[in-house]
Length: 358
Image (tube, rainbow, N blue to C red):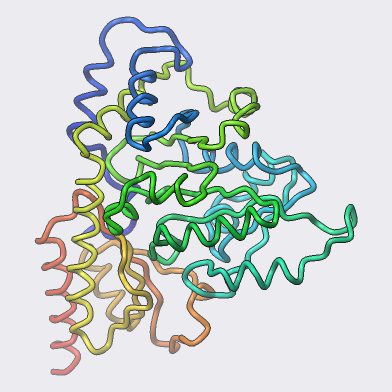
């Protein structure tokens, strides 16, 4: 009953098999190898365009290095209130950008809306150099609330951003889950909708550690190789990244993994909705569930071996509050989540309520 994070899984057998294959023989280092070349070509095919692609080991490095190419130190990055770059990456984005400021604009809602962006742009000061100039919009896919931006929503936000001189960054830690949810093409959910730079994450969806920074706007990539090296994120045995990506993308394996995780989340949400004392905070559109439950139930579940995390109460929508005897929790399914885990989890819930009524 592991619903703590999709980071807690290992790698898929297909990804591991490709790593084993790539492990033999000699290659050049630092990404100058056949596996990295194959991975980049596979990404070009997948996204139906020419692009620049660079591999790093972590999502924090991917986001921070990407943003450092998109803004100057005296500029700002607009993002969701609980975006990973502002809430869960310490001050790494500020470090790599040289001090660019994060600005949250979503006003407690699950996704950034055109109104949020418009409201901010209408009130931002323009007395430069005294005021901070906004230079980039960052969108997380799927969002910090497990919600998915449609291609149309991304397109509207991108168009507004660019009309105001902002480039568009997408934190795609769960981009695979978003594509599987929307049943659209990766291109439709990225560059065709106006995204300039995508940080595509495989780590949460079947890889050991494989993140790739994809520049659709290739002009923004001019300094990336220097920034990656200077930041200590250029891996000497680059084939380890390339092989994982080749195995991950082969025969749409990445989408199969993501769809499995999404399906498990949808089924778990349906089961949870049958319990009166549990409340789903957001619709389930990817592989994350956000649930309000009694503290006693949470303790009962965790004592029995269920793993999930208490979540940030201040990220709740403005119209939802929790009582003192309740907690706000996040549950995440993955490509290895099985039906039996869901059933065991829900059996524990039923047993708890039966015991408390007795």
